[in-house]
Length: 430
Image (tube, rainbow, N blue to C red):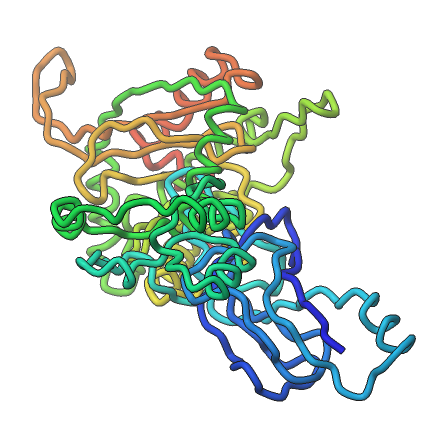
């Protein structure tokens, strides 16, 4: 009997996936549980196993093609089943695919990231590699449903020459039927030359998630942003004195910023809260877990330092260093990226001064830090050179009022201005 296995929903609202690599060929014998295909979704890359054993009679789709959940992936000849037994076997639903935790690549953007549940993984893919159009239309892969591709093959039609009317220009069976009776003229050589001059990079599933999350944040949170500056000459001197100690751990400015934010969050819990409007409630988070936007070659990741208020400056520095190394080597796991309650992005590390960060929804706030600059400041009624740090903060104005933002920032900036206040409230190990 023939069994058609369709792309299953592997969880968390999956709608589609991209074929990365086929593990089977037509005519190949497989057993139940053998991997059929590697699929990239908006959250993970995972192998899809076969629910049944048999012979591969047909594959649907090619690497790089996007497949909707519920669309056919393979057709399997199941041996040894006939009649009623075959009908009953065909009715059984395959078990959902399991996910194996290996390397992860859950990349997001400053202030937003979405990851899958425990056990998922997203290894290195081909995102960022430039693909160029050539003058040959046959070398270009168009979006099409598996059934439409099969229909075009049977009719001897080039699917690449068929105009699609489906979502994102996807070719459907109706388009194939229309083209069969009313073929469109081939594109002119001039148009092909113009297309060849452009660099075409297909949008990745990860970039789709970034776009979705950014819009979700903008659509669901009432963004309000505040900008300020703080004179941090004493912080600069304090950090230098610590780093000059040959026996001490080397500190960047980030541990001081994290510690100041963590201390202030304890006295301003609404900044560490989440608005659950559907259930008409505010969720005040007890844990203070700070997400840090980190720049990598593949994009920005936001790993989380848990219980930051309970850790010393040296502990924070070590954890930042470990997370940064894991991010560079693509070794972050899902637990590194989950459960953040407040986010910090330091665009000053690459030269930025002011920016308007986007809230990591459903969190209520995100703090942005710019580069420290030499500026004239007034001290003791005299203009003297100073070190000035710019900050930008975005909050969800539905839950956080302007007065609370000002009070929170006043406390954070007072500690950055006088780092001994941070040292006195350090906590964690000595």
